Amino acid sequence: MPVISVAQARHELQQPRARKWIQVGFRVLYKGAHIPGSIYAGPASTPSGLRRLRHLVKAWPRTASIVIYCGCCPFRMCPNIRPAYALLHGMGFTHIQVLDLPQGLDRDWIQKGLPVRSQG
Image (tube, rainbow, N blue to C red; front, side):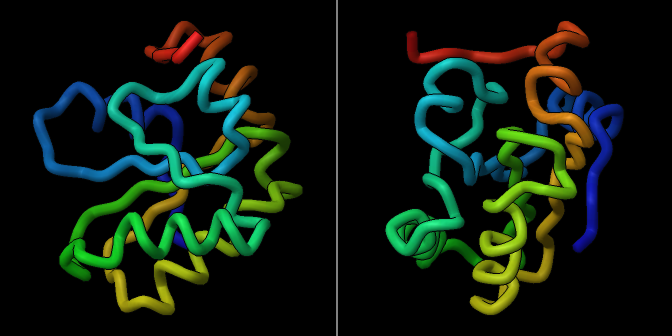
């Protein structure tokens, strides 16, 4: 899976670019804090989350630039990233990257003072 680092992501968010950011984790995490402009797709570790992701992107061009992230736990243990990537790749998307959050969204993004939004 091609990854994008936190430093690269911070830079990307400052650029006016038509990149799609998709959170493929749990709703409670998205509501509490998510990357600005990201779209909630649901946990890709569940059939309903994968259905929601498929429905969300079905009309997008297969050349769309997409970054997926979860941040629920350390990246190497995340139950959502790999199924989401596999689904998008299997649908023919060619520009998918995964945000590398080694310890999770809280430690690797929020505690570093990077921008977040919440739905309180």
